[in-house]
Amino acid sequence: MSNLTEIAHRHGRDRLKDAVFICAALLLTAISLGSVTSKAAGKASQHEWTVTVIESNVEIVR
Image (cartoon, rainbow, N blue to C red; front, side, top):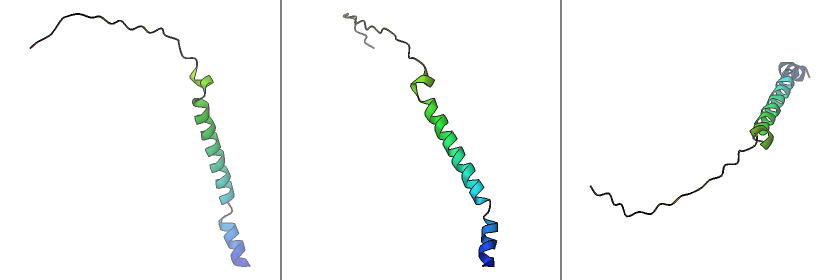
């Protein structure tokens, strides 16, 4: 049984490292999701686009 207690003692900080890793992963996920939401992006400005077609008989020859 002493081997099990030594193993448990050596890996005692693994739970803390796992908890820190999970918290960091959740924080990064929340930040990345928040950056792509429409509220974070703001409102897109509405531009009125027009197209003008000009017909002519101009030919450029080299």
